[in-house]
Image 1 (tube, one colour):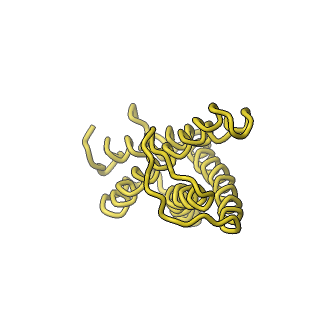
Image 2 (cartoon, rainbow, N blue to C red):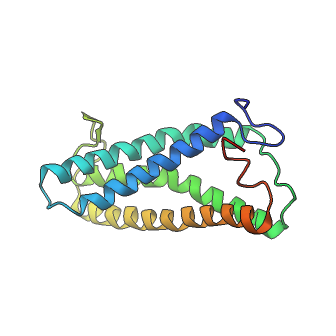
Length: 181
């Protein structure tokens, strides 16, 4: 498998970043949900909050090269070609995913800063960039939660569309992104 995309498949770099992003998003969602199992102020909850933020920052770090590759490298075509409306919907969904990959971590960092806390990255504290603000904390908590729910929906749509293409339309959409073809 080549590093960059070919005429028929995504390359190892795009595939690796895609599946790494998926794993990081799953880890972020799981740690966010697991936080609720522990009381506020407990050590376990604090550790999960810090881990959640660390996964979010990794998503942000991975999103930048993903976007650059998306803009710079060719995309292998879907064979057989899909109707124009499906192609347009896929473009919109992919841009929504990219927006979420940037907005979720950024709003998370803002939220933590507006709480008056520092963002932790796997045990290291990052400088606080924003002042404490209860009003903005509340607003960013709502925005971050809304974006997380939107991500659930768009990721579900993305996965469902891949399975629809594979099992119903029987095209190469999913196979282009699987390491084993």
